[in-house]
Structure formats: structure tokens, C-alpha cells
Image (cartoon, rainbow, N blue to C red):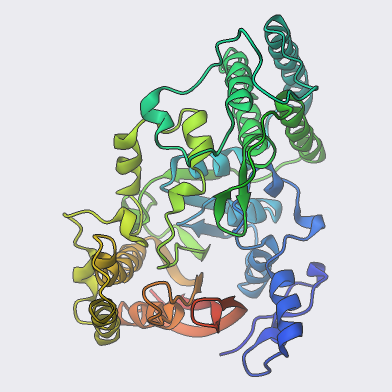
Length: 457
């Protein structure tokens, strides 16, 4: 396994320093792993509009753009584009990019982050108008948004979500008064929904909601921290608006390629992207780790109206790769794609054997072995259907991580994905070590790797 060459502009230690052939001491490894996955301050433009905490860093994308020799004549695809890290970096390099994402809010976020045609001055003026309207409404209710209250204001019927939507939120993820003020701001914002800047202003509210207004915390998984009785909502939103305005001013009157982001299921990639149209893939699919990825975007998806009820959430989940038991359904049959893969079958059997030995009998625990097969089957389906989309000579990079989430049975995701790809006609170029991370359950260092493939055509 070799390590790729980083771009000179990274200003970071080269990734070759982290190859398993030259292991680091524990204290060094801890520093390196935290550093290598961190977003450099110089990379923040556009990315910091909204970003998953666990997103892979822009410098990793840059490394593969350089390693693959990509330029303006090429088309890059991210079939699991999340919040658009690959898409933004490709656009910054002047490279045409295509993205596919099944999560409704992540799709919205990534599509906004690559829309650089909005006039920043128009966005700023519109935001100030919305700010004024919101503060006026709050003042009429006796609420000063800049002076946090210690308790609920008296004599005011606070706005809230309808009961069906509210039940989908993580308990105590946002306190009543900050939610009320957010909904007032949202109503004022919706009066501008036909303006060119509306989507950018809405994304700014999402980022403020998650990181400033709500009670959420990330460590690194999403959880609920100490409740805030109140929080400055309008000021927090305006701070996010300023970030977007400043970035848009940098690129104003400059020409960049269009970037398209499709809402869809990556397993059906050939029905979304045209044949023989992609030169490279740089992506990070979900990991088989029992993480419900919808929890990461649950608050903003519900409050801002992207998901309205349990049926809508279920419909969205059904378009995901099955990476956790909360997203498994009785009609799922992706496991048929790996029915003949002995190692995946062995892992599933080992998980089931361990479950029986430990007496783990909940409905979710009974699905651990099944979801493992569904995950790799879904990835096999994706890679099979991707072949017609790729141009001869296409290069691919899949960022994945080893897992031990299912009763401590080790899953070497990168190697298994490489095996599946080779069986489908891809050439395995190498598996690069991106970083390692310490798993508290197994007390082992788990590898996060980049599976590098080549499609000869």
C-alpha cells in the first residue's frame, strides 16, 4: 500500500508520512490524525457555509485532483457528495463536476455551495431587510434578540413545530424560545423565496441553527448538550450571511464551470448520469458503522421544512446505501450482489455467531449480520452501474474506513470494496492510508483508507 503525493499548497505534512510502513508513536499519531482530517483555514471559503463535522477535508480532494492529473478538460463525479467537498474543490480548480446525493438537506447544501452567481451585495441588502422585519416582530412580542432571557417570556404563545415533525427531532435539540425566534425569522425569510439569494440565506440559517442556536454538540457524533434557554438568532444568522457574502465577493465577475448536483440514489447512478461522461470519481460513501446519517441533518431538515413527517424520512432513507440497521427494510435485497463473496459471508456469520453467544436479541441486533451484507451489496450495485458512466481510463478514489461497530467483529472496508471492484472489472491501483483513528470498543487503531481504482473501459 502506497501513500499519495500531496499538493504543495497543502502546507501540511505529506501523507506518505502516515503510511503503515512507517508507523508513528502513539503521541505523534494522535496529533497527526487530528491534523490530517482538519480543514486548513486557507480552505474555508465556500466549505464553511455548511459542512458535516466528519466530512473529509478539502486538502484530501486536492491531493487526488493533482495525483490524477485532472484539469479543465475533465469531468469529476462525486456519487455520495454529501455537503459538496469534492464539488467545491473541483470548481475552485476550474474543473467541471457532477454530484449525486440522497439526503435531502445535504443535497440542498451542496447545490447552494457551488452556486457562485448570486450577487453578494443583493444578498447582504436582502438579509438586512429580513433582519429588520424579524427584529420588529420580535420586539412587538417583547423579545430583544440580543439580550438573552433566562426563562420563557410571559404572555407569549411561542411558535413551535407541528407534532408529527416535532417527534422526529432529537429530544431537547433546540429550546422553545430559540425555536420560536428561528421560526419567526424563517417566516420573514420565506417572503423572499423568489429572490436569487433565498437559498443562500436559508443555508446560512441552517448553519447558524446547528452550531449557534441549537443545543446540539458534536463529539464527533451528533448529540445534545446543555440546554440554552435563549440564544441570539438573528445575529447568529447575520454572521453566517457575512461569511457567504465575503466568499461571493472573491469570485464575483470571475468565470467558473457549472456544477450540477442531482438528488438521487447512487446505486442507480447510470439512470442519473449520462453514459461515457466521467473522467474521475472522488468520493466518500457511508461506512458500515451503525450510524444513522439522517441524525446529522435532522434538526435543520425538520425546522426548515425539508422533511415533514416520518413517512418522508422513511422515503429518503430508502434511497441510501444500507449502512445501519435503522435503514433496513423488509424488501431490501442488495445482499444478492455479494452472495458469492466468501469473506463478506464469513463476517456476517461471525457477527451472528457473536450475537447469539452474547444473547443480544433486540430487533436491531438481529439485523447486524444482514446490514453488513446489504452494505457491501449496495456498494457492488453502485460500482456495477457506474461502469457505463465512466470514460475509458477513468480514475477513482473511494475514502472508506475499517469498522468494528457490529459486536467488535472487524470489517476491513477498504480491502473488501477493492475485492468487489476487481470482480466487476476495475483495476486496483493501490490502497492509500489516509489516517488511523482509535476505536474505544476494540482498543485498536482503525484504518481510514482511500481505495484507488482504474477503469480501462
